[in-house]
Length: 207
Image (cartoon, rainbow, N blue to C red; front, top):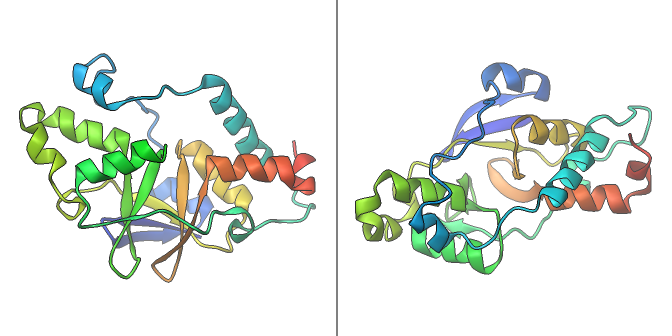
């Protein structure tokens, strides 16, 4: 089961098969800012590794196309349980430093009772800065509770990881928060997918 949250509010709950109907796949993955802009050079410190990205995609496909006669693993079997999060009172600048310091692609934003609000990433931050380049300082001091975060696709702990892997491929997702009764339970990321394919014997046989 998948749930789409929009700033902490449940928008849609649906199966993987119906997800594409309620949230059409956006074929455009281009970012809103120019990669040559000075401010991006200042904030961005690491380029993507194409080879590693291909490895991740292949891992997704191995899981998404597994033989259904094999043992099925659920999200809870491979997800990361100890999730680093930020609260709604965190500023954009603080969130950016966390992303940079710990080399995170994105960080879940949660309420005081750990309900999922959304995900914050460098891409989101840089888009905010580029949208109002004359007020960078004000934007960086803004709290996440004052930012309209993009809707986020989540899954539950007992979802079949084949379904999750396919959704990650289709929507080009780096990670999917795992939510149980609206509470953040964990997260399943590219790294978790790679580890699963590498370390679980059954997954090594999928093709």
